Length: 324
Length: 249
Figure: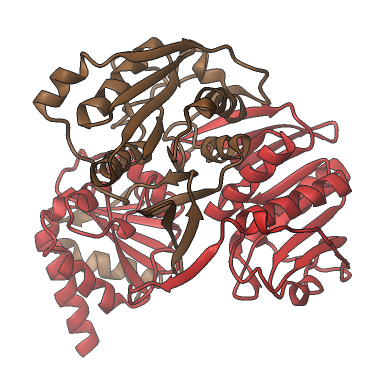
């Protein structure tokens, strides 16, 4: 059995979870195995029957699981692994997925390879994986000696695919929980004050780097984003370290990992730590006055010139077109 | 308050990576080293906690003898003590092995707050802090961007897509920190000078059996072909055309 430990948000499976199921199915096919999914959360029972491409769904549906309860979730996931003896355990490589699986690995004394991007199967057995190093700037091939093999899947590493087939069997997993498993829990959820569309949801992201020169200059990127619509403004580490933008706007290894249809990079030299945050963009358009900037080796479209002239001209043209 | 902060010495790679001939490591010839970015913020947070609540702070690393450089950097900023778990083969230690050595060392020292980076810049394993917490049976919150100490409790905030998750845990506790929690200070000249005199507790550690074994390191394929749309504001019509073609407008 391959056990896919999935995460839910707002009564739906997250995109990263759908990717995880897809990867688990692919692995199952190559290792001639079946896939079971584990859903932990409040109200997950309703989601179980709709899952396809898995033979069984284990559920731990609990009123107390409104938000992530790290130690309780880890105890349940560890119990599922002990009971079902899967060969491979796979979870999304999100912040929560990596947190959960590290706790599971610690509990069961198992190794954990986080943010895997490739799987090498030989003679029907998983031999090695490739995982992200340096936020994805480098890839590391790793052999995992402990069993079961516990992995998390790097977000966006593979595309989620839907599956057909029969509805899975649904099994309730009951694990006794004590007060201790609730010693770490969310006391309050403060909604984001940020207005508009998030960096990870936007179809178009406009990023500003050192070449912006000031916090004020980002106003024109905001204006451009508003004209394009469904767009968000992000920044490099240089820009956030200079307090031109809040840290939550940072794209890169220590910030957000984005995957928009189009990323417009303005005054960004293209340091690897930034590029790993935007490498999953379908297309990258770079505006930079330095024709030698490394960003041009990592972009699809390039405009050489001063962004302080080009962006206002682009805004004027888009306004003219809208007015027409 | 006794605060521990664990850091990792990583190559300070700005422009790009060169790999060693055997394809197993990053070539660090002519490359400087630094404390991993999230951990730099953890160091700053440790200093701020002690400045506000009093007590002592200790920086710990598992690494080669040269990692003293990173420990002294933390001391120069205001950390009061340092422990080096010396292991020349530190690059082949997996997270479970590293956590075991750290937990064994710090267990008798009775820290109230143990800070780690959320993940190291190089291997990005996301788990040493959590594994140490498990071995010490302490509560742990990962990826925090705000930390407030009130008596024997800590309020930690974790940024998620919807906003902020607020956790409250009893001390002692482990936290893994993300960049953005603070802006790290630069060491003062006086700090740098006096850091040279602070003794570093050194202990040689032997690698326990590991579960993850590196087989190779490689560069990902980059499949983009650059098309230059033009120079200066004259390129605007071409940009607009491209935005249309991509369905952005």
